[in-house]
Structure formats: structure tokens, C-alpha cells
Image 1 (cartoon, rainbow, N blue to C red):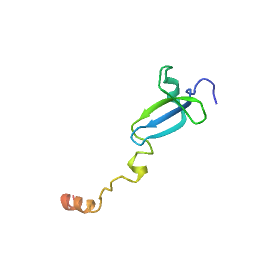
Image 2: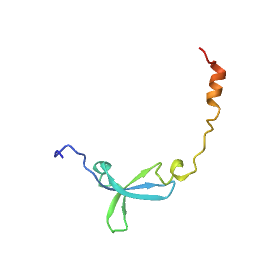
Image 3: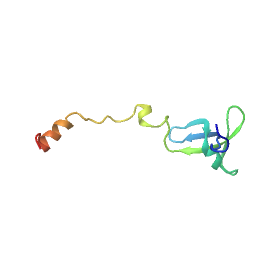
Image 4: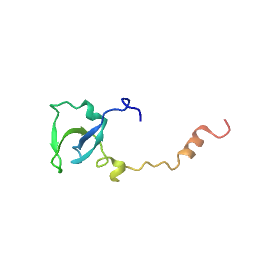
Amino acid sequence: MKPGIHPVSGHVVFRDRSADALFLMRSTIFDRVTDDHERLTWTDGTSYPVIDVDVSSASHPFWTGRGRVVDTEGRVERFKRRYGRGR
């Protein structure tokens, strides 16, 4: 790897308030976190900056199974009826 071209990354806690979930992972947003940013002490005893997110795998309908099913049956037939076949 070439030195000096990769972004700085570090450990950050992402908090999904809607699902009350915490995720500790490496992120390049670590470089933009200031010293006065909110911090959280993780189970290993280390303090990490906290970033609030709107949606995560803990609250997204696709991952939780609460998504609505869209009925696509009959759309092709409706299109053919509306616009005809031989145009």
C-alpha cells in the first residue's frame, strides 16, 4: 500500500437511538470527530466517540423483517392492457 493516500480510521461507537443499539467499529469519520464530541465507555474500559445514526441493521425494515411486501403481481398484464401489444 502506498503511504499517505489512505484516510485515517479509528474505533467509533455508532448509536441507533430508535432501536437502542450500539455498534463498535472502525470508521473514517474518526478523523472528523473533535475532542468535545460525546464519548462512551465501552465494555473493554476504553472511551470511544459516539456517532448517532438514523437507521442501522437493528432498525431497518429489511433486516428486522418488518418491511411491507409490495404486490407486483399483475403489473405486466396491466401494462399490456393499457398500452397494447403491437405498438
